[in-house]
Picture 1 (cartoon, rainbow, N blue to C red):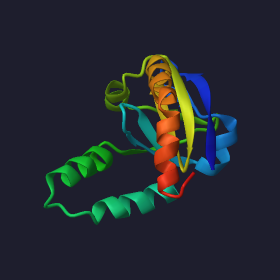
Picture 2: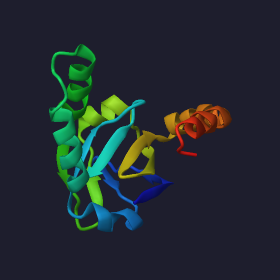
Picture 3: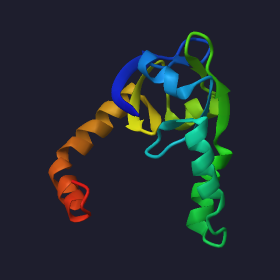
Picture 4: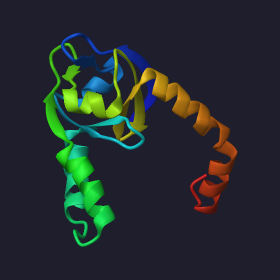
Length: 144
């Protein structure tokens, strides 16, 4: 399980070191894809395979579904995790997420999210203003 947030840097060779506590669960190969809210998602291969199967089974007759599936699947790339625990972030994904040098890696249960540090701070400030409202909605769903 992935939890917590960590500040890291993308090196000049476009590599990002994954926090040590996550490396064992990621093993030696991961999938990096476009995420929501202009971040990147990193999935362990086992989790990605299940998600990709669900996405591939969605109806192609609905334009919103097609668009989402294209965003996730066409934007995905499998990446080796090197011996130092680094992953290569392709240019098209860096551009999509607006990643510069400083990033935040956020653990979200079954995936990691990679955010530009400034965008993460802005997103978090907005989200934290709505925690009471969100908790109330989750309570109605029996989650919280």
